[in-house]
Image (spheres, rainbow, N blue to C red):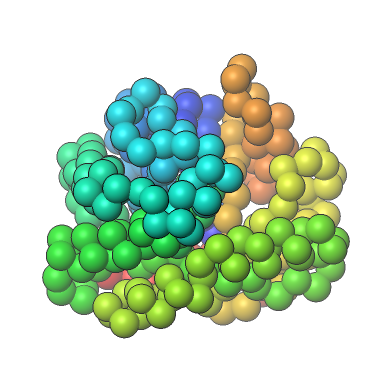
Length: 264
């Protein structure tokens, strides 16, 4: 169970640390150029979570680099129009920043809006990770976006999960495994960021019922909505649901244990 976007703002960071305290998370992916990342780093280090790099090519967050809207990035990657030198430089910068602030290598690497699996980015990322962490025991695991079991999911969300996987899951998985990297079995938690707490609770119940050993459920919680964050109200809804006693009941009913997918 991994929360994305640590470092985006304090409200996200506080929610992630509190859910860790409640035993509802196993990992947190970091936006290392986010405005609150360095400020909140100590609380994350003390949380007991596995910490990951949430590789970012779509939101500048005040940093210089290759950043563009998701649709534009998809077209540029599939047309192989990105400058490979700039792509590699951005990956190196974000890994350097992660290590400098947290003082260790990431436990895992995934992508903001799943960019880590896109052509050009995935090759540069896997190559840099293999160079930087040459021994198997030191290598982070990587997020696969292959869709998990979709029982109970509306058609539009099943389609969205399939589209995300089509954007690179198979090729990314083959490249990663060929270099000795481990990946989760499948991904759950894909939805359209609508529905409030009641809608999200319905989805979470279905994801927990569908989860299999080795699956990863992603979430995007925050303690409160923050002006300028388009997902602010829904982030708060996700937090409320994950922190609830009802979720604890679902975890017990479905015999779901939240823990690290892989240990060093």
